[in-house]
Image (cartoon, rainbow, N blue to C red):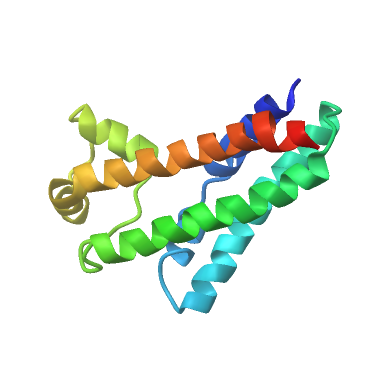
Length: 152
């Protein structure tokens, strides 16, 4: 398995398989220091998956890759959280997962006033932030695998 696929698989494991609403909330509420610690924990999970999957598949440069992923992922998510804090009114902001969004788009979601209010007010902004976030992660993975690592 090549480095790009390992990094991509690690990203999916970090963002989908180990998703936690508790950690998602921690990244967004509390002091800046508390949020930074929660972000660091989230990024450590990603780096851990890079190390484990890289080791399993025998990919070279995996320690360097794990460090890169930790710091770049931290930067992307830090900017995302700051953007959300400025874009969304805190009294309406809620943590939602991809399944809830899919159910909302299909019209099969559980009626919940706070969820409906957030989605009606912020659906397109929330979607744009998520698409941009995942695109930046994908580009950073591709840049590392195809450019940075190749130059070493």
